[in-house]
Length: 133
Length: 133
Figure 1 (tube, rainbow over the protein chains, first blue to last red):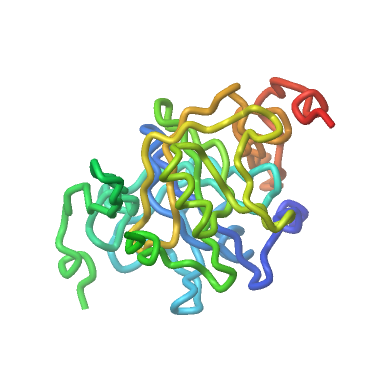
Figure 2 (tube, chains in turn yellow, cyan; figure 1 turned 60 degrees about the horizontal axis):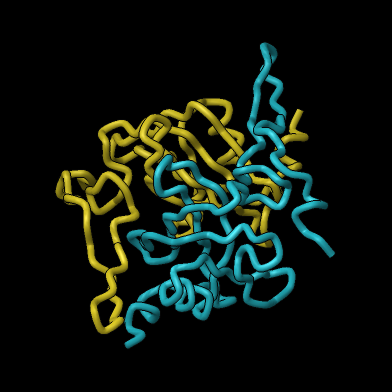
């Protein structure tokens, strides 16, 4: 029953990176980590579940913020060591900074070849309002 | 001059995952790893360069296959520990299996809740023809 979970190439910590991509627009919203339990629960419930390395526990995306991810498709790459979730992001905010996508640091290079990361993308909601204590 | 490289949160092995996404369609083509040198060269040359963990060396994508990636944008996520490249994939094949995208394993779940990975996406070119010895 769990051969599909055995087929995933978990790393030494029992994790794989998982990309959450907007199922309609194709925008990449975030990358997080999954352990076996997180991937199994995601497939069973259709809701994005990850493993928080900082808190060392399952992280049901949206459990505090309400920004739940509805998963319509689960893919793995050729090596079975990266997971791709096609999702609908409830609340339109995937990033803990209050932005739609976590990928808001854009590398800009000036005339002299100097590069720097510039924050783009609007903050849609104050993080303090997202994570009520 | 390299503050932008210092800002990246390299892991214990000095690597970060990098996603290559079609700049036009939004399709996710592959995920590989970058070290500092790979990211610097990618930014400087506008060509996708990775670090091959299996060969323990820089991997200039397309060096054997000709399937070079032209990079139009480089992004990092909120934690600066994942890189996103927006690219044009020359030859239309990013995967070593001869497919356009590496993410061709699709999880399918039957009526009884049994899940399995099913290979989708056509093979556009025989890998033996791509990698001429």
